[in-house]
Length: 259
Image 1 (tube, rainbow, N blue to C red):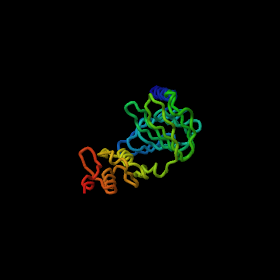
Image 2: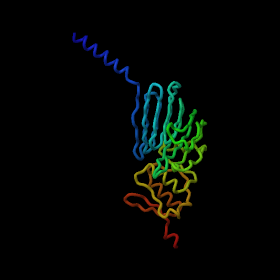
Image 3: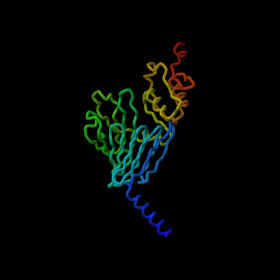
Image 4: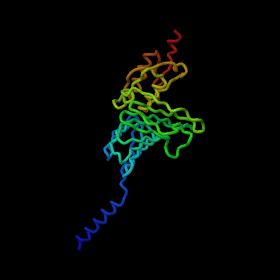
């Protein structure tokens, strides 16, 4: 009787498991300066860059990932019966088996999130997310080709949205973070400092930003090495580095200007 009762309980337990929807996933995140490789149960891979948070739900009919913040490289396992959908900002990226990068820059003070989608290989379709405002820049689905980057800049939600930008960035530069590098090719000092700040809790600030706004930066730098970046830029442009408790400041060399 005892063994019969145990067998009955086992059958009931299996039955209850089979009746539940098959959904797997969870929340995955990285801290500032951290990277993480996540292997999903369907065989797909997610490489999370610094300060990134994603939510995953793998069901019988759909595979869904929401990028709440940060940047991630998706290498999607092929499964035509279960589309792989990445939701970010006010857009959705639809794929079946491909590799692409999604980067979300959070908005603030009424400005919507900025979004960049770069297709490494394969094919994806980017469209406006269900339920988003009709005035969003993506008026219809956009089919991307390998090597293309689609960018939606953050816009004031009450204003007319700007156009969708499509370009072809250097892929080695765009994926340099996977090697722990940041590559700049004649970008503004303000832009370069903002990119370096993504990887460090010791931010770089520009003192007298108006005087430094015309400076340009090129080179390869280690992500997380804010001090090394600041020293290199200071040496290149004749600036001074001020090491404060909560930040590094790049400032014009007033002594050199007066001499």
